[in-house]
Length: 178
Image (cartoon, rainbow, N blue to C red; front, top):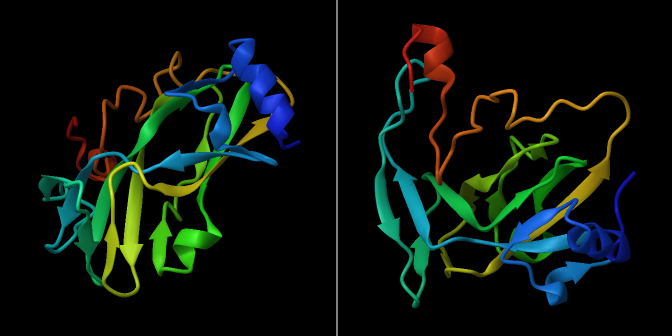
């Protein structure tokens, strides 16, 4: 079951959903409009699942930054979200998709207990300028069924993330620690 605008607002007021910062005007019929944070990691070298991803990090200026096709960008949501009651699902939206911006296609599920700013995978079909704190997508909240285990409390792989995080697949392949 997907929560409606009124149900999300009520869950925020009751402390069952945390969105920081929260702006009621960003609620839509069944979602919350999330924004791009102020930092990007640009991954322009070869990618290897058995090695940590190399990147350069930049702050997005107020005048924006042009994303280029063929590069992988890792960003972060402006909002930090979490819930011990509801799972979350983060998507891009039609508005940014119409600009050729593909955001967060591979890992949209935020488990119950997920409580961090989201690392975003971003691709551009054509050169496109993006700006800090621009709306990039929608976050929906889903009611769960059955026993819940908190992602944060059970030590999920990315539970300790403090911002943009690279793939940790290399830890499974090599046994290295992040």
